[in-house]
Length: 258
Image (cartoon, rainbow, N blue to C red; front, side):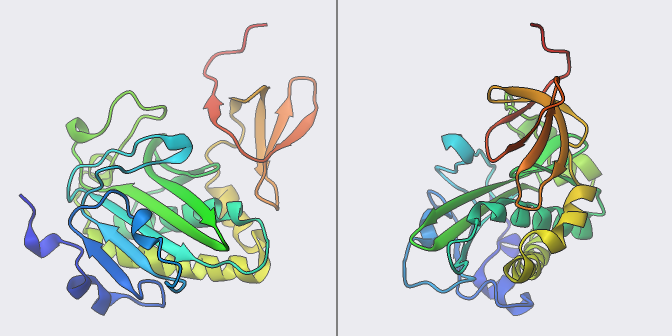
C-alpha cells in the first residue's frame, strides 16, 4: 500500500522546486510510461511528468523497465533544443545531472556509463531514454531508489542496484527529484551555451568505461576519453583509434579469442 505522505504529487513537489523545470508538473499514480504523458505538442520546455508506477516502462532498444510501485523515481522532461544540433548528446547531459543529483542526495560516488546509464559500484542505478520528434526531445529518467535486493530485476545486461541497497539508507524521493530537476536545468543550460565542452571535465571524472576493454558492434578495443562531440574513443588491438557514435557496450572480462 502506498504511503500517501510520500507520493510525489504536485501539491507536495511544486512548492519546493527551484527552477523552471517542473512547470507544468503532471503526476499520476500509474501510467503506461511518463514518456507518453508528454506527447502534447503544445507543452512548453521544462514540462515534467512523474509517476509512481509504469505499466509499460521502457529503456533503450525497446527493453522493458521494471519498477516496484513507489520505490523508484520515474519521470520525463520535455526539452526543445534549438536548431539541428546533436540532440543525442543530451543522454550524457542528463546522465551527468542524474549522477550529480544522486551523489548530492545520497552521499554516493556514482559514475556515468556511456551513453545513458548511471552506475554505483559497477551496478546500474539509473537509466536515460531519449525520444526525439519534431524538434522536441522527451528525456525519460528512471532511478532505483528504495528497492530491496530482492525487489531488483534479475537477468539484466548490467546488474541492478538501488540507493537503498548501495547506501543502506532510504533517501527521500522528493529531495532527489528536486535536486535532479535543478541540476538537469543547470547542465542543460550549460550545454545550450557551449555544447559538451563545459561538461567534459566532470564527465571524464565519472567516465565508467575509461580504460576498460569492450566489444561494441564489430569493434573490440580499449575505451579512451569521451570526445568533445560525445562520441566514445576506442583504441583497437592494431592501434587504430575509432570514434563510436552509438551502440551497446559490452565490457570484456576475458580476452577475446580469435
